[in-house]
Image (cartoon, rainbow, N blue to C red; front, top):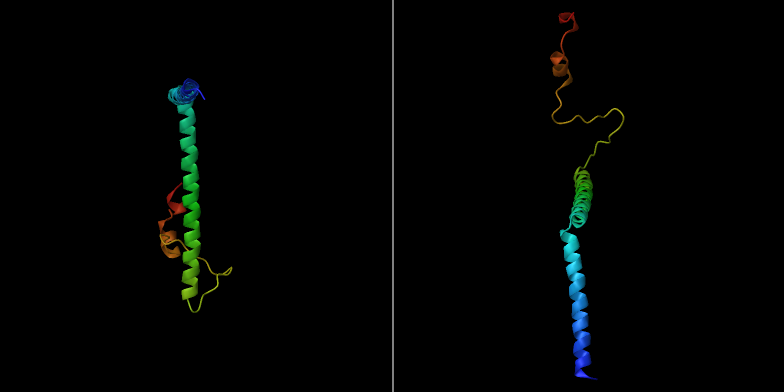
Length: 105
């Protein structure tokens, strides 16, 4: 083959590659390109948050199973058993916090 033909093909390929890269860079710096990049970033953040949430749920279930396995006499949760939040006030204290209806007209 002719060396000039090889250099012509190599130069043409390099020119096409450089023009494609330049066109992509120009698009990324334009307003629609920046909007697309921001949307892709938002999608990535949402996907990451979903993965973290799934991992936390899995870890919580695993932890609850391990706690249940360590308890030799587990108390089943039934309709009469309720679990109050840790920061909830006892029922007798909660009633004293309510305003008396007789004080207001």
